[in-house]
Image 1 (cartoon, rainbow, N blue to C red):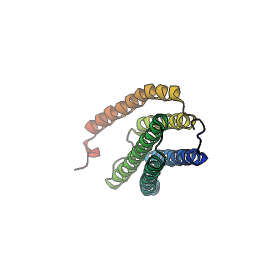
Image 2 (image 1 turned 30 degrees about the horizontal axis):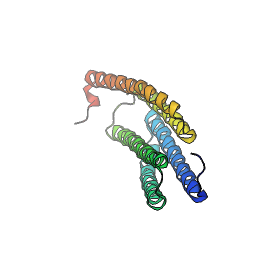
Image 3 (image 1 turned 45 degrees about the vertical axis):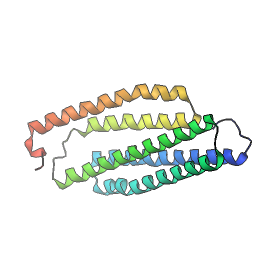
Image 4 (image 1 turned 135 degrees about the vertical axis):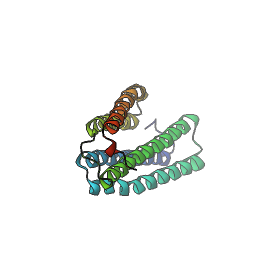
Length: 186
């Protein structure tokens, strides 16, 4: 965290909220791994776990935001500290969105299974994109923990690779669906 402040309580609050963000990041990372597993193994049970975890992710986001609002209200942080707190808030919101995407994948898995779609979907490409995104998330959490702005900029550059992988998956999926119309539910 940033330089020590006169108030050790403020430092403690900053450290506490940062640890909560890291905990949220770990939970979301686990959610992604489970979503990938549910997709590759067509597991309704694991998909249900991902969906159930989303409420905890949402709750943690709200708790962290409340804690940030409390810190801002009580401590009236300097510009540097305020920027850090706002960055933490944005990080938390982005982690929550990643959790939403993991939940969306889990719901997609359940829908595929319920619709009786074949297990031969080109999921390996999606799995590759998700694994790249998961590795990027790990790097982002590491950069956050170290407050490493240089690494954060590098991560932004790598994000394009994840987008390209996902776009490739979507193209293959569309081709797959056109070749076998049974894969399109009515």
